[in-house]
Image (cartoon, rainbow, N blue to C red; front, side, top):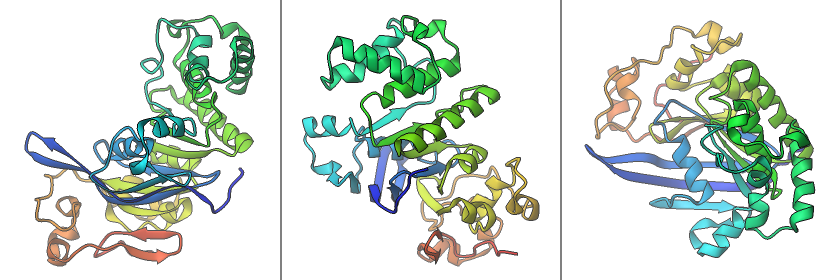
Length: 322
């Protein structure tokens, strides 16, 4: 895998709120992360943790209430409409449902060539040649050119979506639960394909998933999200083998992987308890057996603890490492 320490995208102190039925929903609460060139950052967490909202603000599809987002040296908040449109050539997205993201009425050739047409790249002949090359790159054949999505399997549709995302030669791919709707065997094939594409093209991935097993296989770095906050962040080995936040340990206890964190700390479980009150400093407190008995978890400001250059967490009483 091609990789450097150069950041191609940086999210700094970003917050995003929405009006809900019961009041203001903090979809993102002062989150920060960066994407390093040629590497994969996985955002993991349960449904409603803010993963997809984080992807949307990075893509410029949603504007944050506060904070800054820089992509390839450009501040998204300062870009005008046309500038933002052109930047989207550098950052593309593959979504969860392999069928709904493709126009059922269009052929595979038209679907994959649509970004080339949108950015006025090449002519009809060169676009067709490029589409054929892209099909080969994702494991499909020339015979698929004239097929419609309903004539393809789920795995084939997702390969078409990946080919479309690659058409304009982006530097960043946002993969939003890109394999969660696929059968297990097909999922493995697509994950291997994504790893090969990244190695061949030096792409940077933001990989959004609720599946820690997938994150373990794909990611160089993992950020664990809970209710709009990043509660733990580190390289893959730190998060899996030296996890310090109770929520991370609880998630790992249900992962079918033979890792030290699973075997030694399986007693830490993710509980389904009521949501925390609005005055709680720690938004995980109502689920945490340790936090419920500590006054500082309720009243003391929760800061980020930097355990090492590659590992940080937000917890007053972190899990001890055996």
